[in-house]
Image (cartoon, rainbow, N blue to C red):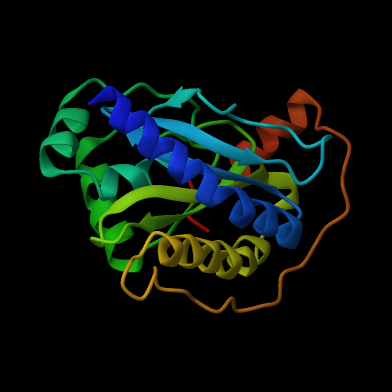
Length: 218
């Protein structure tokens, strides 16, 4: 069973490689492929748009499912997994992390209804993430494509402008896996707008960014 799981993840990573590379080039931000392994998420693949860009979670590293882009994986997990995760004590990773199981359960429904997630500051203070589901030939969500960037570069309306490319990348990968019709894609309200790189924020700036976008879905 473990051997089959490893082979499946290897195939996912190989399929994702060109998709992540194209997404990182188009958006100018790091692109990730994340999967659920039991009660945690894991970064399966990463393409860095620029070597100077911060990597929030390295490939092979795990993360919790109730916060940030992990919540998209939780939204499509089996009922038993969702129940078990929400019945546990949920740690607060940042001041913006949502830990109320009732609120999270409601948000899981909202995620499934729109098929994407944009979050800010929930896993890391000062970081914004945009995630979309990847489906296999049976229509099941097997992974998520994510781009993550500092909130200083993700002031509205930029997150919404990047949603279209992320959804398109997820649809492309879903199609490569044989999903019927791929994942639904959406047109961004405004064109993708690249921004100049800024110096890393001082701690005070990071806190200010977190305060301004605490737990917001943009």
